[in-house]
Length: 261
Image 1: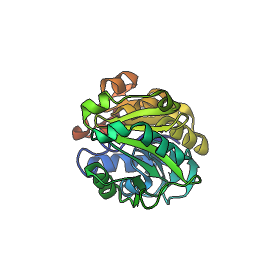
Image 2: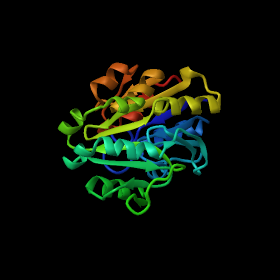
Image 3: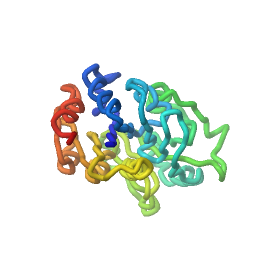
Image 4: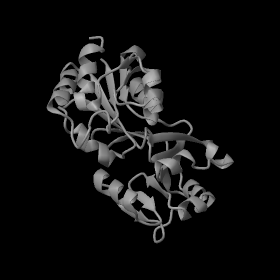
């Protein structure tokens, strides 16, 4: 058995949905008895529709950048959640950035939590089918868990976002030129992939990871890494194989030309 782990945006899809060629190539692996996982900054509700494009088989979700690992049916296998108090402390530390127009919000285990709505929040809620938690009316309690803290801002603001001493207790991921994400030090797509690898008892050499952005580098470097042709230079340097861009069916190309059958 092999395990194939795919990022979504810029890897599985260029626009809204995977191409028929890509779907056929992934289904061929599932038909052979291999497993697939989708690893994304999105939550389970945003990943499940993409799992549904593919035929029945062993399929997993690595949501919120690997901080929650779930079976296709939503059963939680592992969570790397943080106490809700982390978000309010982080928000207070970066009040100036909020006043300057940066958007700071969080993922709980079942909703998006924020103190105000904005275009970034609206987009997340719509494309990921998430519930909204207004933290003014429903503040995070001590026993509430969060999966990640999100910063959405201009590329320049993200480049210059001040990382304070207290922020360095997190693993910091650049999932997009406009996004910065803070998760537990022991949580990312690589650790989520390793959990599934051990869960399924698969050899490390039989794990193939596909991605294009900074939050994919860890899993690309740790396994049989495939960087998309449209990937960042950091991804390409970490990869064992650089495939065609997403708009040229790079995943399908790599499955045909790189995977050791």
